[in-house]
Length: 135
Length: 375
Image (cartoon, rainbow over all chains, first blue to last red; front, side, top):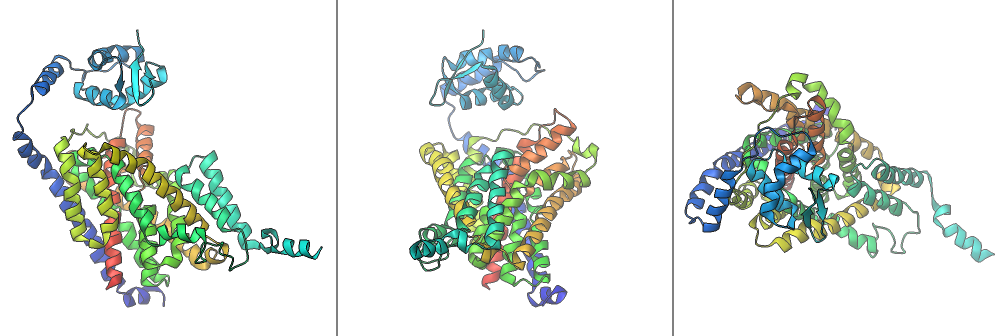
């Protein structure tokens, strides 16, 4: 059997329409729940007492804001990263650097970090740790 | 002399026919594409090598071939036919996936849903071409552009088609840089491709931890047949986001997924023996696979354009193309096309959101099709 006859015989129209509706409605419900997730998370997070360490970090973050205009020269970019590096100490993981850079408002930190690696400003110390090599 | 002649008549060289030669050339082409062109090397290299191994002719009954009960390859192939490897791959995939951008912009999930329309259109096309309903469902899932999902559903519904369907699914995933860009260009104007997406907010750790259990509950309750894929997927993601089992999450996203990928690719390749692979059905599957993949890409883009009619903050319609679940190939392609139009337009993070929702969408679609066929 071929063509429309085969589709009708296998109940194909119903399978295609109901199937696509189920998939679509499932993802719509999931996206709706996700859109409310921050409210639930906010409620849960309010219950946690803020730790002192967290407060100190927040103060530090307020002092520096790198979200403004970003230079195109890699050496200028490295200079802007200096306070973040000073905060991290002599050796650190790239994930740590990325998260702090993001908190400071650095636009697209993954791109600058990759460029620093190519330029040799970030030197691997093995086992996932890196040091800063820029003067 | 007789012994030598008898030995020579038993060698693969003497037993080979045209079908073996064709499949060996296909295998070599896969290996070439993976090494020289770097097209999906993690998949094409094991599959290509598997095709070479699977197409060496031998005397049946020696326990050598993948379809012979007592062979080593047959035991390894059990991971494919039972759906074990796809589940393990999903576990690792979950442990790799970052849902931040999806949680920041939940509406992008709709693009992942829209791109699944290719699956259902192909279901109708395959039925119209005379495939049986179970075969048609297995072929249709190629439109999800998700190799493990295609293999999983085919193993359950039409195990005799695993070889061609897996090869078609992975080939089209590898050919994303060739298939998707023309469709993206055709369906979008330059102005649309230039639309910039604003920087997404950073979801809190609590949100990221809440999402996997919610995902399991919502998706698996809706389509219980998707449990073998989505259960491990969200479990892997919970391990990643929980922050308390980093060792387990690292193992899942490295050693475990790598092991499963090696055996999955190699045995799927080995299952493409010329005599079972080179049939008219395989040709039909390849044609329908291309149609499925193209329609999935187009539906995502068209749906993004429809969404833009109602949205105040427009979304770049290119993102619709990454609603197929070929992670991260299609997201990378969208990103590159965005960069080509405007070097300061970074779409990768947003495209990954659509990509990960596409993974969820195609797994639900597989579960839905499987449950339809069980009735």
